[in-house]
Length: 212
Image 1: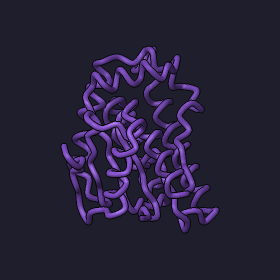
Image 2: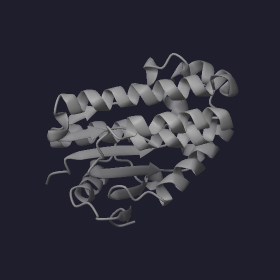
Image 3: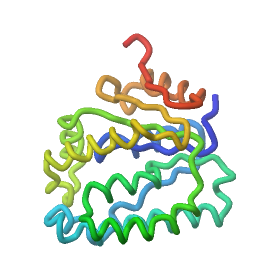
Image 4: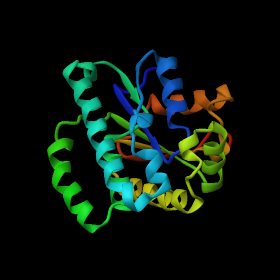
């Protein structure tokens, strides 16, 4: 088995993106690309005061993601097999959720100049689950700056992600509800999902685990 050349994993905070990306990279001996979340100096302040720090947080992430993608392209790493725990296009989800009208206008002016340089994945995997499970996972991993995340924000984010990927057509897409599977602790669950990833759809496919 082998996975497509460039696979991107997406989903709401705490859904297991990095865990799945790491497992796939190890299983198929691919280069792992992780989003540089903790380098954002505005993130903690955003969770304290979203209205004040939304724009700074958003622009830092946008430029950071663009820089990381451009560096990979310049190193010709997109010619190799990659697994990433984020999709560049998801930046818009947070922008439309968190920015006010004037901030969004400036963001939309800047975005086209950046996204044109970013290669698209060969396959996107969208992980989804319930808000309660997301909150439980966030609490378990114990990141201090995430302690301030509210249930209301995760619910809004979850709905925004679902809307985005319901209309997503830019690449092949596998939608995986992880509520009833455990690809981290159950090797059979991981292998079953990996088999589907190795035979990706042409459009959108809603993954159903074997025997479920």
